[in-house]
Image 1 (cartoon, one colour):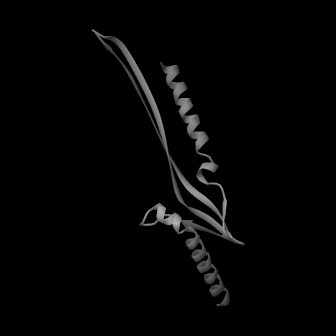
Image 2 (cartoon, rainbow, N blue to C red):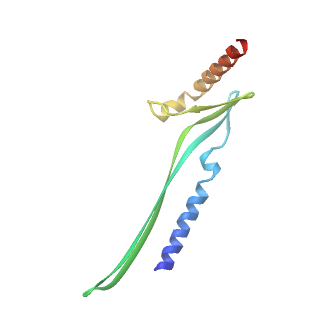
Image 3 (cartoon, rainbow, N blue to C red):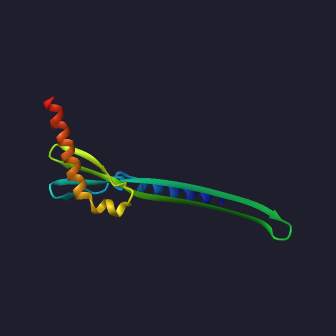
Length: 125
């Protein structure tokens, strides 16, 4: 049983390692008008194992083991660039992720404009 358990453990950890890579955490880039956007995603993983064996006078010897793993992926924002400026725009809002995705183009433009205005104000003082 130990050999089977170790083989199962190896398979699960190999799968989790292959899924927790840069492409999973940082999504594929896309264009949104003048903006280049890259989605940023949070990846969380959990893993658990257990096993045991026992003897019973009427049923005999028994043993068992189990292992499991889980992974969650959550979009948390976008890296947006326009020209030489790169900004992170969070998708976390009180209204939920759907509302944030609907407003992404507007949010990106407003955020980039505000940043440009701050830089101009600092440069003139």
